[in-house]
Image 1 (cartoon, one colour):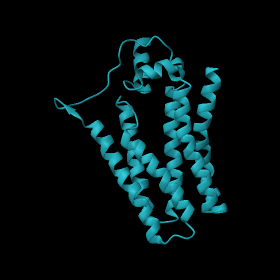
Image 2 (tube, rainbow, N blue to C red):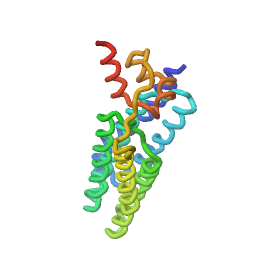
Image 3 (cartoon, rainbow, N blue to C red):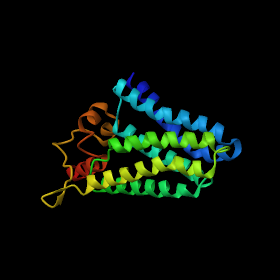
Length: 219
């Protein structure tokens, strides 16, 4: 039963990744209205997969990684379309890339890579902005299209600052890093797909740290 629930939840996540790969040609072939419907459904899967993962008790590190990668690729694909609508879209694209770079830095340096509350709020603003822009693209003026991006740009900036604060939080002039707690008596495969392991350690470790720890103990 766990496997079925796991597959359902991660299939919903995969929908965003699949849509990200086809949304650009869909927009240029079918226009803003059709694209807005597809994008709205895709953003709903982002809410649904998280809810079902918690409800079914099947949250895992694998699902968390897949969710983050799918979200980033999906958002970048939509913002690329925005460049054909308004040049101002380059600003949220640059900010989104900066967020990705910060997350990669945190991952490589053993910080917990976790979406903050501001980051989650940014996702909601992103979703509303994308859907509204596609819905109104054929009738809206250039000024209105640019104004729609303003709240998103603000939340992108706040997210960048929030993530930077997490990196440069100073205690005794040292950057705080998360240390592994105890020994992990599991294989990497078990750690990636175990709900209990994820639920216990999601706020304390990232998978890179686990891999490094396992490599050291296997020598």
